[in-house]
Length: 230
Image (cartoon, rainbow, N blue to C red; front, side, top):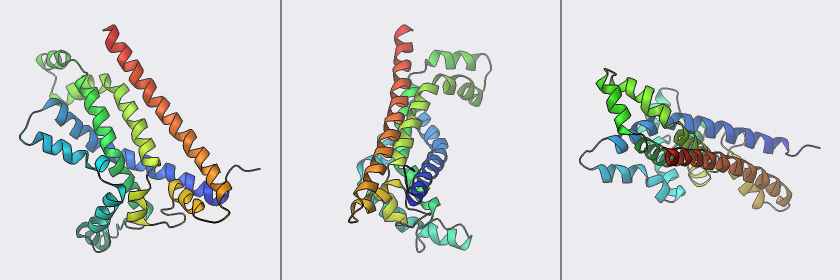
């Protein structure tokens, strides 16, 4: 007896694919933005930080509509992508973009806190010994921020995995392309007789969310314990 139907299995696999790609694509940008917030001072920094956190504040449907306006077939960037044969609207890549945008703020917040917890004296000492900025970052800052990075990745993955509003607004619900697990769950709830399928997908989503939360909590707890011992 299979736990999930073939259609539900496809939706689950697509959610993993979309979430992993979305988080992976947003990670480099999140690292750069978090480092700027943690290590530099510049004019308009509060405004910049506020813009980065907008996806956490705006209703997901609004974020999805903005993505549709910009990256849709008639959008400024969407038209260029269509001409280059790289259309992402109403495709799984568009769902990955929506997931990346929604998960991005969580990565930035977690990484900023991790970078700020690194002792600046270690970075300054490495620079004094002749290490360049990139070597200091990859040799000192990033390794010492590893626990915060893992925690941020776990939370971002959970957020991307559970994304619904922005995804369905931007790329709709297309079986095998954009119908992720949350969208499939919503459709089952809206369909007479779909309660059993909705319950199955709910249990799967809860298990995945709990695992991601435990990983994040464990990493943060270990990081806090290490700081206390120091």
